[in-house]
Amino acid sequence: MRAQFVFGEVWVGLRRNLTMTVALIVVVAISLSLLGTGLLFVKQVDHTRSLWQSRLALSVYLCSAVNPDTNCAKNGPVTDAEKAQIEHTLNNLPQVVSFTYQSQQQAYQQARQLFANEPVMLNFVQPGDLPASFQVKMKNAEADAVPVTDALLGQPGVDSVGNDSAILTKFYQLLDGARNAVIVVAIILIVAAILLVANTIRLSAFNRRRETAIMRLVGASNFYVQLPFLVEGMIAGLFGWLIATGLLAGAQAGLDGLQQYFPFPVSLSTTDLVEVVIVTMLIGLVLCGSTSFLTLRRYLRV
Amino acid sequence: MIHFENVTKAYPNQSRPALESVNLDVEKGEFVFLVGPSGSGKSTFLRLILREERPSEGRIYVAGRDLARLTNWKVPQLRRRIGCVFQDFRLLPAKNVYQNIAFALEVIGKPRRFIRKVVPEVIDLVGLEGKHDRMPDELSGGEQQRVAMARAFVNRPMILLADEPTGNIDPATSIGIMKVLDRINRTGTTVVMATHDAAIVDSMRKRVIELEYGKVVRDQTRGVYGQAY
Image 1 (tube, rainbow over the protein chains, first blue to last red):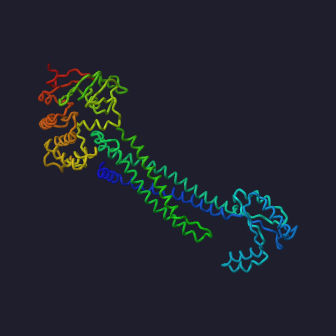
Image 2 (image 1 turned 180 degrees about the horizontal axis):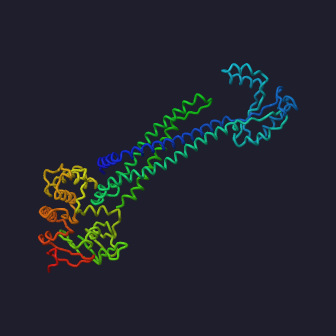
Image 3 (image 1 turned 135 degrees about the vertical axis):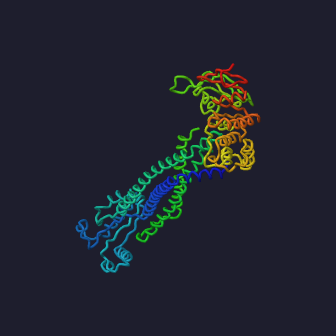
């Protein structure tokens, strides 16, 4: 194996159709970085989902003195007997893992913490405004929410049941939609990249037809004849991947920058980025390598 | 060295086969002229030896190998034992004399030291001493054909196939080319040369095989070009 010779031939090949090579690298870079962005999105959604899965709870709001809602207007504020009955129901529901009681005073304290930086809200909220509630944790926050809610609504003393995951569902839909859009564009670009690889290799094979003819004549093995083209395609893929890596690192930094606007963690770890970068590299190399190989089978028959 | 057994080669969409029931033997170290008008099957004969084509019928043995049993994978091994020279030289225009010859060794993975040793030897053998750095377009037709012969011979093949090597060269220069071919033949290499050049065939007095319409019509040990019996 003459590595120096092969790389010499590859260099000549890449230089001869420079414009095609540059176009190829750019398309590979963009398609891989979009694909990578899609993969980062998937990871992001997974992370937030599992983060919230452990924190999601149903809030069973109890009637208070100031609550004008129909359910409470009839019976007035919750009594101790009603409260005990609700606790009993919760204890008997198989989906419920645990629940805690939050008194009106505790709700007020939590609100004071939440609005610590907003004096207007702070003055507005008074003790007794906020209802007492049960914070109910379930085995599966998304699936179990409906039966538990059904069991509790309408019980005397229960005002309403708030479901955290209902709010998040829209958020997830937004994220999923964005991810799907990115992946669709990435797939279109990957198809374009495959066609460009095939075209570049074809041009390269045409440019080097004299060399190839002589190589076949003097008994160069198929491997030797095809290797320079294969390496050419792979090198273009590799350069595209390097650029894509840079773009992805930038995308991750951008996500980190968004962190300040969210009260929960959205940034991805470096491990996630490295994982995505490795996946895109493999996809890039397999894509360029196999396309070159298949093109060569058509154009460099012995 | 080359053994044809009842070989027929028919191309699709052609009424008459290019070669029909050819039986012949070429021994090791022989020098053979292949003569006949255009379309008589000379090129097909050479392509069959290289296994660029497969026969429709019959068997071909080259250098002891049954070509019908040779897998595609092994074809390069066969071609390393056969050198080829063409009417149009087929040199690489961007490489100089040395590089053109070295290319044939580089692509079969020969080590650099070996290449440095044998390429100058073969350049001397074909009479191009001191012209290592010339580009093909700086050489005369005769000199270009010498480079092509050096490239064909540098790997010391057992067989050298020459397809009208003097076709683009004037008669005076052709004599030099034939001398080189003769020199190569004297090293024990079997030479098969397809030609239209009557003067050369007549002067060499070597074995002549004449083809006509794909059939062997004459096989003479010390023959001439024309039908002179």
